[in-house]
Image 1 (cartoon, rainbow, N blue to C red):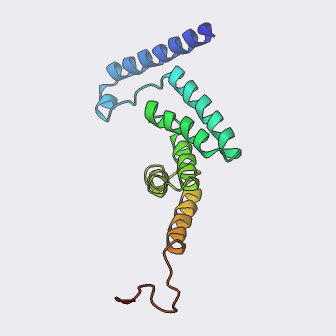
Image 2 (cartoon, helix red, strand yellow):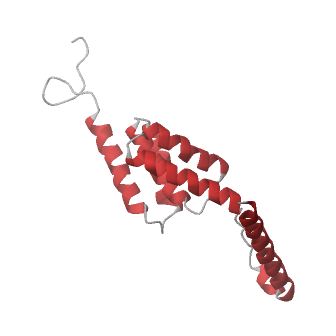
Image 3 (cartoon, rainbow, N blue to C red):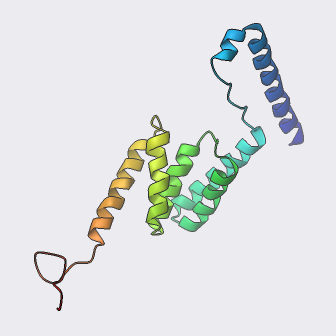
Length: 153
């Protein structure tokens, strides 16, 4: 296991050295913007594992179990390559556990920050469900017409 991790670390260092050499040889390219930080292979693997476990909990409708794994990813690796899926799944889990505010936050992140994600359409659908639920959960008067009871009654 450590040999694989050492090889991955060596590969990342090699790629970083190539990027640095490229910036030295072609300084104009370096002025165009910063190169994103290399992905930590161990952190990425851990996040991938947590996402896999979170998906299993999600499929079994074990919302709090899924949230535990998904929240860990958000806390430890916000640059995870599949963070859009993490936000979507967390949003759905929050919705199912009646934590509407957190559900909206997570789903809105998918829509706003990950516009090219395959989860955008589903996130919008879940947001629409939350809006519809909010309307159907409002208190209703026994009288027809206005939902507001007149004073003194």
